[in-house]
Image (tube, rainbow, N blue to C red; front, side, top):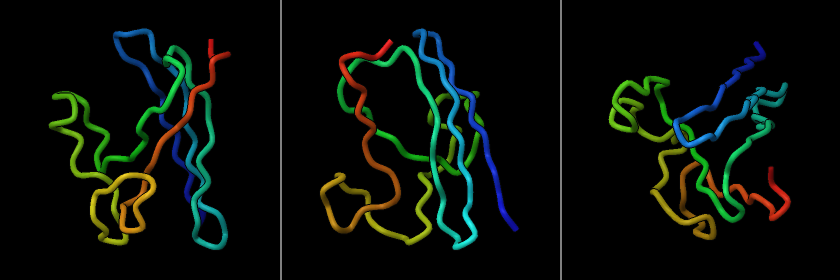
Length: 92
């Protein structure tokens, strides 16, 4: 069964966008989308287990970590799913 998820981003600092998660036939997941209002540079990107933002990050649950790996920097071999997104100087 293929799974598709859509996340609509928005906050009180003029950040917005839409992120799409598509599970491929081989079980991998492709992440695509657009974001607006982020400052140029590196921004951390990870997925929480829950979509509940009623109490900020306190209600979103743990980070998605299907392999049970340690929290680590993008260059660490032992790190859970996630990483950085680079926003270019030409960002809107």
